[in-house]
Length: 283
Image (cartoon, rainbow, N blue to C red; front, top):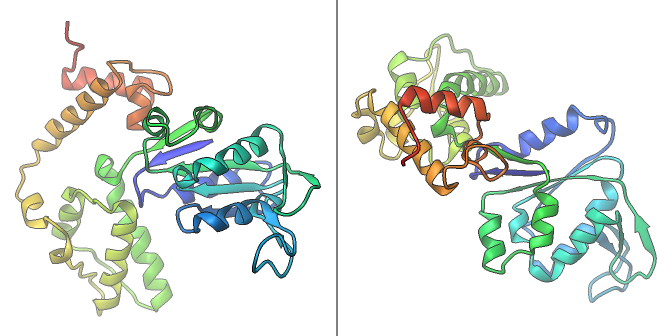
């Protein structure tokens, strides 16, 4: 399973939800950010090592795949895995077996892999930066998480959720969120996605004495320009975004590489929006 999405869209939360709703929920959920581990240590993190396998290996280490046996392993930023390590990842996906570094004993593992990336893996395959066989093995069930700017209707729900969460943690009470502040948050483009919104609300809870949540709107990049746009441009922005996705998919709507998948929509939903916005395929 492969989750596509920009940084901060909540790919790990989606992976956890998949695990918690599955038959594996009683077992371990193991996560690893592949971009946060030095290249030379990534193989050991994934598959473990034996004592003396390399300089500094003073004890045996259990790898993440072994820890995730009968559970789920979540590999974030999977596009950062170096080419020389990708065949070993492909093997554990296909054969469900691996060896620890420094060991000749083959271990078998039953773990569901959920991978995530904010990069275009297909383009990386074309540029010989990612193995095609591993890409197709990961891309069996792709999920696209749309950025927050494409789902402004979620902003009020997230604002209230984060405000309640941080208020409870800091022992604060808030009765009101100013409507003009909420409207500004809805209009903002959120380049940092949900993570940016979460951090902003945390700061708001810290600096607000209550009972009104004072959101520091001046910290939003380009807030003044965004706030000055008329509401009508949202429809045009949606139209342009759909057109861009259609052009990138060569006007293929369905399928894993179609425009609907790129936008994180159902095919029928995209067709409805196209009809509503008057979008037709050029002759």
